[in-house]
Image 1: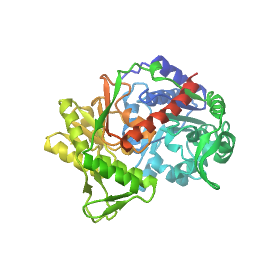
Image 2 (image 1 turned 180 degrees about the vertical axis):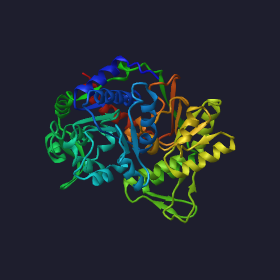
Image 3 (image 1 turned 120 degrees about the vertical axis):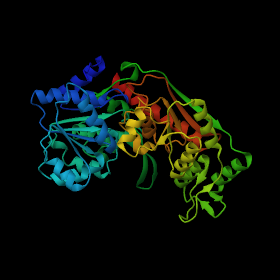
Image 4 (image 1 turned 45 degrees about the vertical axis):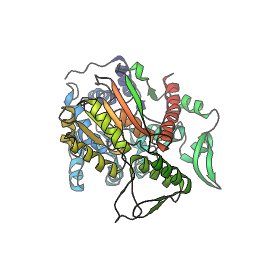
Length: 451
């Protein structure tokens, strides 16, 4: 297929070619993959790139990047190998002669340990750079050892700061080896952050010092490119629809008592919350309709079916239109599958790569996904335009945005509808409000970089 770049994509390609180390903080679905491959092809032709390493979420590494390389006339000449599977297969893949090596982010530490001092890649691309936001994660620590050996680096993400500015340091370190925001997370925090919640010397969360966000934006804008969705390919509308669910009075009373006393009486046993973090997860399960007990030998306790009823209503009104349902707990998946089977609906949980083709070929009525396993990089826009959140992803803005972007991205032809099933006056509503507030923080950063 012939690639005709949009104006913003041409600018992004030039950005990657002209800046040896850079970031593309572009909207999800803006075509970051083909932009990057075009830049690699150009740099390969000029002799500036020899061996490129692409690090991506594992499913994206296996399917999306190979498919994109083979799709376009100007990139299909590039040779590639996917470093995946058992260790013997990975070692064999590393011995291949190829232009591009593609590996899942879970194998980064293994790769660094295997290569040791003989790092063979002059160019490194990280797809979904925000998955390296934790400076304590093994994959970041491993890659940090090699960062000065990268002749070129491209970091791709649509969600650089899902929890705000404190998420930026490790991502920027991989881009510039600490030139702009400091050589260590400690110096970054000392310069730009203040403790938000702490107990003595232990800091649980950090806030941005007054005026620091603007300083950071000015320091990184020369290597980070950002665009608004309106500057990219025009997409159809996206509508967010909150579906209010009222629990029966007796059930709502149990919810309120559990929230207050941290103890819930079930049929076979009692469930107690040891702290507020545990309580949040248990309240989420309560609003979904089932809750795990502390004893694995005991069955999951069913509390109500109100969300299932609402889900059934939406599926009926969809009138055969393909739907993605995001669930969060295993017991939700089991109940949803029972509902789908009772209505003779074709469904899949995307366990195999062939399931992806079935969805995009309209051979499925429903695709059941967990946002953590399918939230990055997958192209699902050809299969449908309706999303239903059975349960929101526990205050995780990145998972929420990335999951919605599986449909709302370049190539989508229909208006996208995103339904949230929210129990009235519950943690569901609190979570929806929290996700919206976090988006304001990230949007502020991206707006400044665009300017």
